[in-house]
Amino acid sequence: MRIHVSHFPPGISKWNKIEHRLFCHITHNWRGKPLRTFETVVDLIGNTRTGAGLRVRAELDKRQYPKGVTTTNAEMDALSLHRNEFHGDWNYELHPR
Image (cartoon, rainbow, N blue to C red; front, side, top):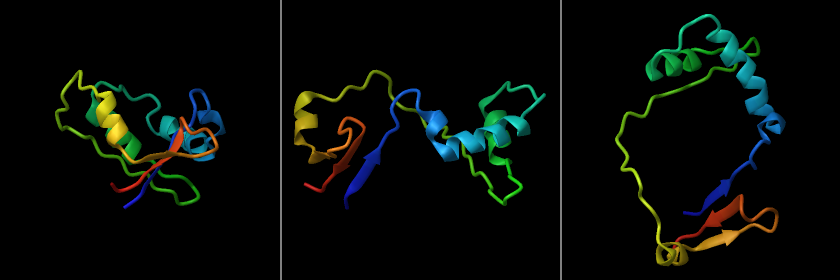
């Protein structure tokens, strides 16, 4: 299976039409509510709806992840990584080995 990865460059979310148009609905939904826990934030995001019928789904990932894990150069070199011509640092494919 090929995996296509596309990242937006830093500071570009205002041009990401979906994120930009959805964030106003999320913030409207949690207006005036104390955001004291992750569960509260995720619940408020997950209960966001728009007038056009968009429903947001959000889920808190409670798994524990080890800190300080690094990838060696050898591990990176072993990947079948193919950078796109357009901004290959942000857009690439991982192909099966």
